[in-house]
Length: 302
Image (cartoon, rainbow, N blue to C red; front, side, top):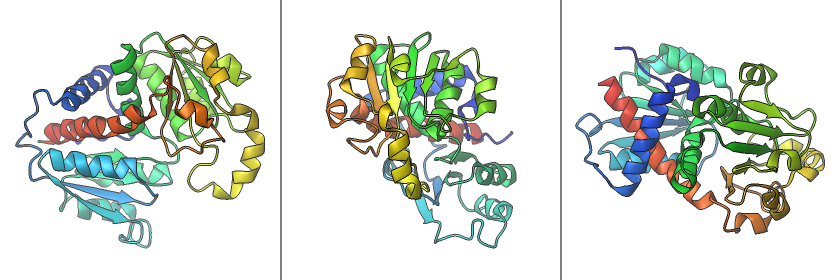
């Protein structure tokens, strides 16, 4: 059987993604959950070159609840890319653990690792994509508003890894995505071109927010960009998500943010605590969505 990986949302079919989210919602409710023999006593390897709160905790708790265990390795604990070829690390770990989640800078690290690995590899975040977060985001929208197909989603801010994953999600879940980013901070042009029917670049945050069912943002300076913080604050000043922006959206609009958030920068403190904000449910759903993902990949593998 071919080993399945989850490096972007495009690695799964639309039907598989829908199945995964149905299962995540079931798991959250505690419905039909009995740890499978195919997940019990399995080991998840977590290789993180970047700091993490939600991703790491969600994966470790999820694996524990599935009847398995996890082992965490920071960049200081491994030889990944530090003399030993990535492919060699993948071959060794494939003989010791059952599944791997990697949080890294270069997306190429994930690609090379997965090509050499004989076990499932999960993208726990790279500079290009963050698909696990999108599973939680779409789950949250479904729980609160129903099917996202045909809805309007606004991305306001940096055209970063989260924005790229929202572009992939627009195609896979068939919603319209309007993106408002400062000049020189727009998302990858090739990715935009590949997804033209679902994605539109607009000039202002107001254009993106108008009649939107979901408004999403992220920090202005991601991990590894801390040195650009002051410059980015000036460039992104007009891109803060405020209650005025939410008021332009649909009456039932939701606000989401993958966290951690910088209150008073990309989002006002008032929006974080607004009844239209779904950020805490969104954060919790990292656990349920990642549990469903681990279960899916481990059962496929066996």
